[in-house]
Image 1 (cartoon, helix red, strand yellow):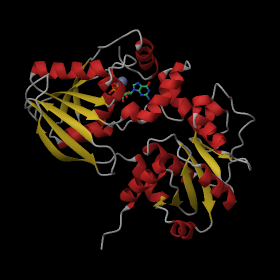
Image 2 (cartoon, protein in one colour):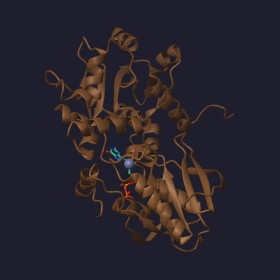
Image 3 (cartoon, helix red, strand yellow):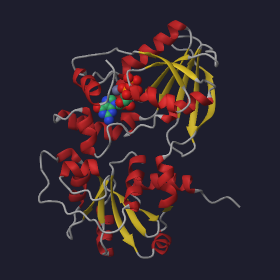
Image 4 (spheres, helix red, strand yellow):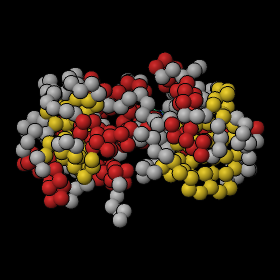
Length: 362
Ligand SMILES: Nc1nc2c(ncn2[C@@H]2O[C@H](COP(=O)(O)OP(=O)(O)OP(=O)(O)O)[C@@H](O)[C@H]2O)c(=O)[nH]1
Ligand SMILES: [Zn+2]
């Protein structure tokens, strides 16, 4: 019988639970109750306090650096909850929105007791749920009993950790003809990753030969730039520029990858924009939120191209990481086609930061 969900499916459930503010239980050699800081409610925090024990707030080393909290576990810190912990305290540690307005009072104490494996998986889960990377973790003596009594999702952390770090295989779902302004012979293909995450799209123009390098673009979703015409980035003009070039050549493939905000999600990108209004650049803003500069899965694009039958591209990009990841994952980049469009006085600093800190080619 195989009606029960497998680990991948349970991870998808856990992600949905955390987004709703429902706690989950992680099991490893030990077990722990996990709640995402961003969706924590006052009543659940009160219930947590009533349980006793030694809860911590796990945050990434990036966020810990901003808060001057010691990260004993390299990539994360376990902040000890004060006995009178309140919801604003939890949110103040997790969310940098008010860092400048109300700097944290007193030094944060962090734990170095025992392994941090469950905390690491808890943070990966909050990231994959596109929430702030911060989670309350409370060790439990009877994790399975606690989960059963409260009908909570149980995730085996040892199995989930590697799956959360891996790139899920996107499967083709459907494709249909779609004439667009750039070219009448367009076809939109939908791909669905097997981890229950966001779908991604491939827009094919003309009938590019599978045995020759295809003019290709890996475009990461940017609602603000692609749809709203934001002047803060160059995404909209890049999207339309790439389509126009493919239209003019009569052939090409544009992958539209739903990795909004370099993989942190639109809500977190808007948090980053607020920080940028406080004077931080695009990379510093990601770090203050607890993210790396770029949280995208670049393998995804190579996998979709491979599944469409392509093995070589002329890649429209200024980002050398995209080229390296294509090559590493079986797609030869025979030419880099620069895509320099859409510079405005609003995005000049953003583009300069990408060149200085993220290695973008000018
Ligand atoms: N976190 C964050 N994401 C941003 C910001 N501005 C734009 N983005 C996102 O950055 C991504 C840009 O995607 P791309 O244009 O494909 O990538 P790129 O790395 O600039 O590379 P090329 O355009 O190919 O040179 C999109 O997902 C945007 O939503 C920002 O200030 N912070
Ligand atoms: Zn953009």
